[in-house]
Amino acid sequence: MNCKITKSSIKPFMSFGKMPIANGFIEKKDFESEFFFDMEIGFSEDISLLQLKEHPTPEQMFNDNYPFFTGSSEYMKMHFSKYAKFIKDNYLNNNSKIIEIGSNDGTFLKNFKDSNLEYVGFEPSSNVAEIANNNNVKTLNNFFNQDSIEQVAEFKNKTDVIYAANVICHIPNLPDLIKSVDKLLSKNGVFIFEEPYLGSMFEKTSYDQIYDEHIYMFSAHSIKKIFELYHFDLIDLKPQITHGGSMRYVIARKGKYEIKSSVYKILDREKKLELDNLKSCLKFKKQCEISKEKTISQLNAFKKEGKSICGYAATSKSTTILNYCNIGPNIIDYICDTTPEKIGKFSPGMHIPIKSNEYFQKNLPDIAYLFAWNHKKEIFLKEKNFIEKKNSEWFSHVSL
Picture 1 (cartoon, rainbow, N blue to C red):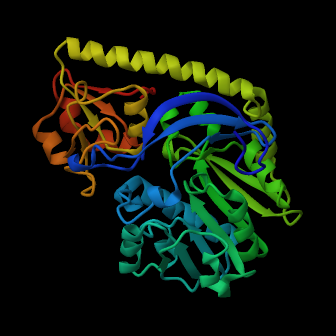
Picture 2: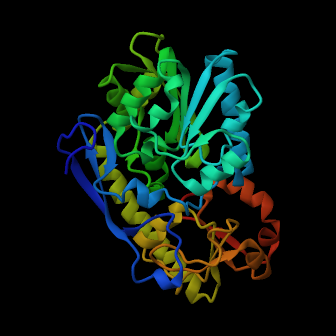
């Protein structure tokens, strides 16, 4: 098992077993041909990076049926509005150019639509890119790499900000990504991205952060070491609450900016938590095994008590939980969701039916397994009928 970045040997330490495409919500006629892969994780000690041993191709994961839309969450729309303001205030001027990698439905870039800034997004899933373009948010339906950036030659060496959110961990060929960024950034340009954070995942035992799209799980140590290989500095970072615990990283050409104290503080904290070595990974493995046992035991206890159980939100994360714990329709009756592209289909691997939120309201269960636990505040405000139902209960493998 070799590191996808340095090609050095890495140490596998945990297998989640056979896993399907996390967002591959499926029709009954396709059960027999469903794709699975061995989801094993390892740790590259030379760059302190947790990564998947193998994964589906990007084309299998991001296609014309991709069922995730950033704009479906009011919280994420608010988050990206604040994010855009942070970038405008700190790194842009009236004549700046900005590029977003993995721009989805244009929720972030629309904050620049009415300005004088020149912008463009790269989005590989055609159905999602179409929505952005229909809303007049300039979006190229393509993966971001050294070939595709030839479509935006006017941005080469002139881009002040390249931005991404929960995207960089999806890209297997990080050396190509960084070389593409290098070709586009201006002399004082910055690469800003926000990714699920290894420290938060270990702290919460939120192993559901690991699925096919999340090829890497970053820490400040791993980001610093990776970008130093290509003559870039990690100049700033800031913890975020999105996706159950993320980190915002700011990268610049070596020596162009002073490195902020926040970088040193978080690196020191990670060192104390041993996030830079394999020891923390082995502790995490044990925590996952305990969490799995507790989850299965509690769900079985609910069933023995005669309680009805549904899943709430057909998330990518739920695919890992359900398949790792072997939770099927014998335990969870259905999963409710608001995404039209998922309703009427079945969950990847375990084939639990996906129902609408209207169905949920008419058939309130006793127990709702909150798969979208990272959006709990927004959901709890919305689902007052369930909360007010006698003896109803939210459940999750992480603390709510």
